[in-house]
Image (tube, rainbow, N blue to C red):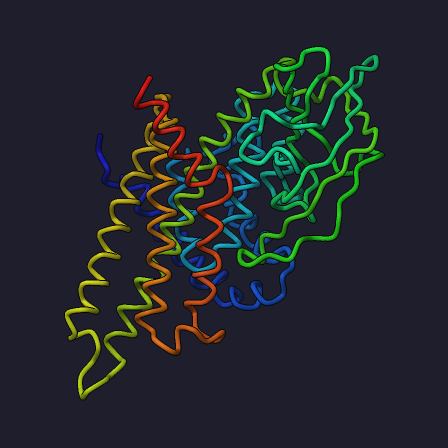
Length: 378
């Protein structure tokens, strides 16, 4: 497997890096402090076609594949993890399952406005009693003529306060325990509501909310795939989403390393830059090695996904290694910055807060270990 980027991928990376630096980075701290959905950033992404990545042009997308999306997401996370998180939920978790499992009518109806940024996408599986145990969802879908009636609620939904189109998972009671089914729900359907957004430790510009379904009538035409096939759709979507989280983690970690190298060269103690101290050098070396290993695992998973190879284990490994490395690197980054690293006007504090979420959502680090172990021991 070739881990080098193609010429086209290198050009995309350079374009994404320049865009992120010029358009997204200047607002990153403000986005974090405002704790509001970063709509301005989302619109900027739409203007350059980044809200339609990995979606074919025939459905209004910008083309490209999972690898292309991964490249862009890393560059976004390098300057603003919240913006990257919005993209991951919008594309990987909402549009991609519609593309892969939707019928032609669904794809033509829902993908173009999502690709253009006219509408915001979300993915709703998590519930109060169904976090890691997604099979334990309580939201129900009862067939009533040419509709399904949905009842229940979903927690911690990324893009929840702003979403227009949601891929929702509910159980069909008569098919239990294998009744999980996916639906495309529109936010203007009667009976749908959302709570005020949650206050979070990090990723504050990628806002979350509880989504409530109170006798929401969803047309049968909006069912995504067959009845009882929701678990397959959910798990395959999360596999791809985990690659996105790995990209986020790599981007955050790379930003920390960049800042630490710059700071270590400038900060002087005992008459010399702290970069000349072996203890600091070794911390920087460890960061660089961990980032490179995580990035290559992420590239491998993305390539496998694009080739149609089973990428379940690779995606889990990428997310596990990248998120754990990211968390350690942000802690070490604060240590290198010393007292300044602990201050709220330091860049380290935002990276540290954002990093923690990469170990939790779309499958905790513990869940990733379970997935990998299952593959090793089968």
